[in-house]
Image (tube, rainbow, N blue to C red; front, side, top):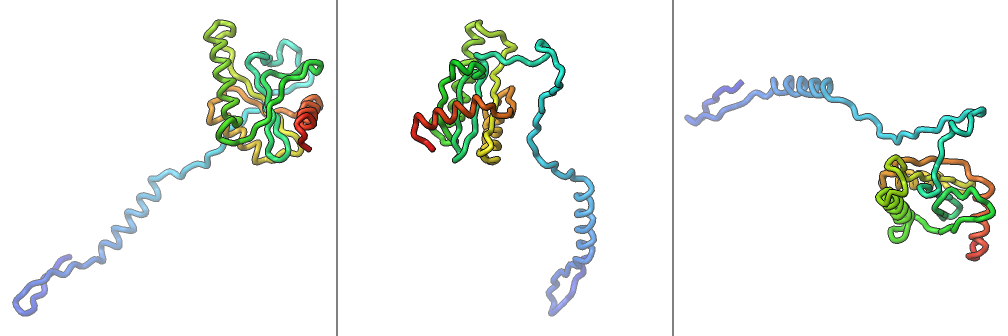
Length: 184
C-alpha cells in the first residue's frame, strides 16, 4: 500500500502498484466472460419453393403493374423495364442505366415504388399488392453487380424481390437494344 519515506524532513508517499496488476487481470477476465461476440452480418435470402408438379393456382402470381425486371449485362450495364415482359410479341421498353448517382438504378426503383404507391392510393390496387422486382443476371454479368443490386433492394426497402434465371426472350431484348444503340 502507501508508505511514507522520510528524507531530509520531507515526506513523500510511495505507492506500491503490484496489486493493480492483479486487479487489471481480473477486470480483463471479467469483461471477456461478460461480453457477447458480434455475429457476422449477412443478408438473408429466401429462395422460392419450387416443385415440378405444382398447379397453376398454387404458383405465386405477380401483377404486371407492380412488377419491375432488372437485367444485368456485361460492362456493368443494367437494363430494366416495368412489368414482367412475358409477351414476346409486344416487347417492353428497355432502359439502360448503371449504379451512378443521377438517373441510376436507385432512381428507377424509387420511381416504380412511388408508382405502385400511387396505384394503391387511387384504389386500382389492393393494399396487399407490393412492388415486386425480378433480378435476372446474364452469364456475362459480374457478381459485384448482383451484390450491388441486392444492396439497392435493401436500401430502398423493396418488400419482394427475387433473383431469377434470365430467359432467352430477355437476352433478345438486350441484344435488340444494344444493336439499336450501337453497343457491342
